[in-house]
Image 1 (cartoon, rainbow, N blue to C red):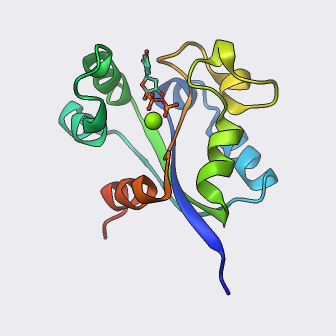
Image 2: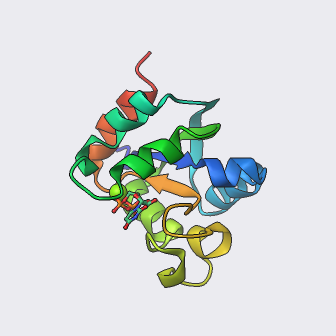
Length: 136
Ligand code: UDP
Ligand code: MG
């Protein structure tokens, strides 16, 4: 039985800008994730708005979408057992200040908005988000 799961990870503009993508990819590989698809892209504000539509009513929505479209990002399809939850654990808390030692956001995050990585928060959303970026 194949019990592997897939999730979407994004290395956000603040991390790509600091050329951290290879180091962050090694962190995923070290935790048993396979990077089965990846691409470096620069999305438009409109695409970011579509991607983050779930946050439409939040006060930070506009800045968040402006930020995600402000520079290149690396989007990846990560696979392993319990990929969604294991990726969320490896990422750490949304605010790097609250993130535990050893997590990606603690190591690389600058602030709550520039927190270096995105990860799907459920298996259902992982499918939707993977389809958003890898629909070919
Ligand atoms: N965010 C922000 N201000 C906030 C809360 C969130 O700028 O007060 C940003 C942050 O970059 C976060 C993203 O919005 O990663 C999506 O928020 P969510 O609550 O889904 O956090 P995540 O799932 O990324 O941990
Ligand atoms: Mg989220």
